[in-house]
Image (cartoon, rainbow, N blue to C red; front, side, top):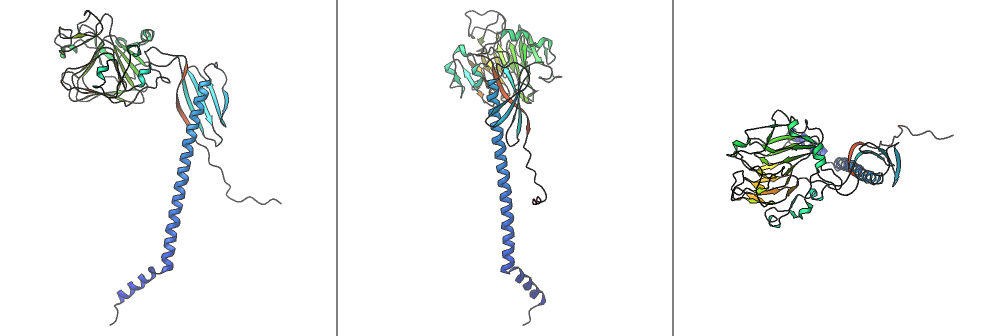
Length: 396
């Protein structure tokens, strides 16, 4: 029987691909290509490791030199050799500009602020309480002595920006009456919806001479910060919705008693002192009916968990009308009162301060001068070695 022409032609093509020589050539090409890819990836990984190692060495060298420059007055830049690296230090008004360059040509530039002292050590913890009975209610917290609580620096507060002269906040005479039947005796402030907190605050410390209210709303209050900001509230803090912080800055609320005010646990949740309430520091209640130093997480109209994208220092009592979540350090000086049964607060520990190397404005410092944390501002990679296109001519 005669084979059809189409089948015969396909057999000839299959015979070409079934050739051992051709298959060996294709396999060799694939293996060589895969080997080249593996070599290229290995070279890229090695360069990445070298760059990371160079960055770590540069940071260590810059940190070592910064420690040595505390006593050197401002003047011309100084070059300091460190472990084969050339480190140039330029003393500036508030710190140093440090440039490192290694033998491979990698260069890094850091800025380092000079600190007058260390911040309170407790700011390095995600949560801290004085009352040991709160440890079970606040997982991850550590107990501290009352003397370890951060103390406000009155001189710094006197020189800071006050809310009554800053457009970021405004007085609101009716906000308290929306929550409490008797309102408050003190001054009440709210964030002005026409402004974004952080842009209109010169410096990094804002003082509220009264109560601060975060009004309830459908969406979180969005605050954009280009630098760290500490808001000291000389009264109570009422939080009706979540707070979202954007930008590279961090936000810390420090709530303290105002002049001639008392801190108390508002057991009946009416916003003012009454017979069922418990004084926290004083023997007799005096002053404004709402007291001071208290924090209320949740208000009438609050929905769901109140998530604070900030740190919180509670100088009085922490009251929970709903569940709460605090991103930064949570420091509770007295107790936690659940006005809604089962309400609890979580210290997430998303970020904490480095007390020995960072500033926390508005609080008394400890220890002597020291360099702050290094902040990298530039990175200049080494140039690859230049290779000539042609081989050099032999010498005659």
